[in-house]
Image 1 (cartoon, rainbow, N blue to C red):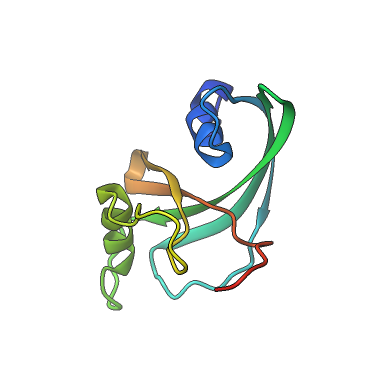
Image 2 (tube, rainbow, N blue to C red):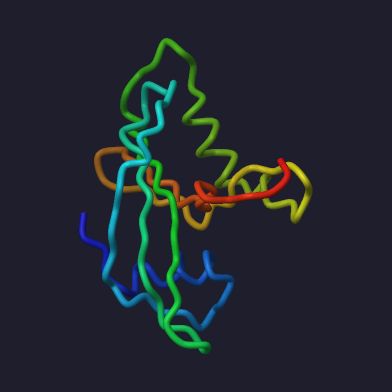
Length: 128
């Protein structure tokens, strides 16, 4: 799937918390290499890009979790619950000491695939 700059802008704006940010379009992607117990998870990748902001060019990271909702799982529907929870806004409860990764966007694609655009916590340092 090809994403244009205008399609990335809402994600970049959420990641950078800046409504004026616009994507420069050049992206890199690497596998997070994380095991997933969810049978529906296709991949988890870290996306890095650059954006124009009012303060100049800024890097932005995000994590994309790709899920195939057409697959059945004997392990339960945890992926479907995860998607529904992010879509509901239930996890948007501020700056508490323990929270889920922020979700910038839930993107429903053809063939019943869903991309969760999540906050990149891979290099986060701080208390749990």
